[in-house]
Image (cartoon, rainbow, N blue to C red; front, side, top):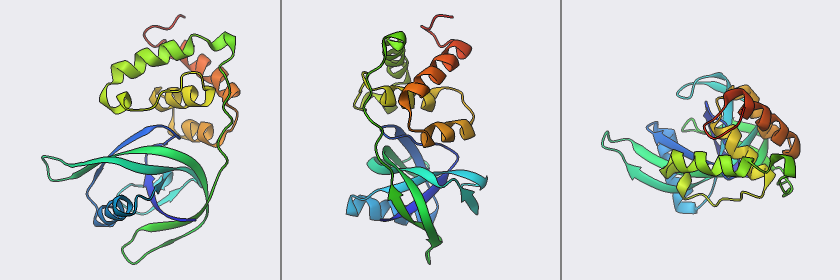
Length: 195
């Protein structure tokens, strides 16, 4: 499978929202092509470099599908995308417009795992936080019984180093991530959590 790649200073998880403001011609073309073809693009965390310049990225990322777009008052194109499936880059090249194109393999979806009893409070905490975050999260399908979905949302919103977020994206053990997220919640003491 071949997809356009978008190197960013963010980690997108399956099921998560991605708001972007687009101004570079290569990405404006990419957005147009993706909307017209109802096709995804790949989001990869930058390892070295910058979003608006040359960059090297991690090999594992998430496919994204554009769900909404608008013209901002500043003239920039705004889009909202949602994460689909994780993928690994096999090889990549740069096209004539400077857009990175990746030959990728889609990684298997994580299994749906019910949240164990010791983490039963997590979905309630998450629901409250997502409600407070407003518009970006209000249209997401909520799967509060799915450990993978719950931990992905927590990792997106908690103040965690991007490299750590990347490690969580690459892991495939939602129950282990529940333990890690519980430790992070205890450390950050989000409103509504107990110490």
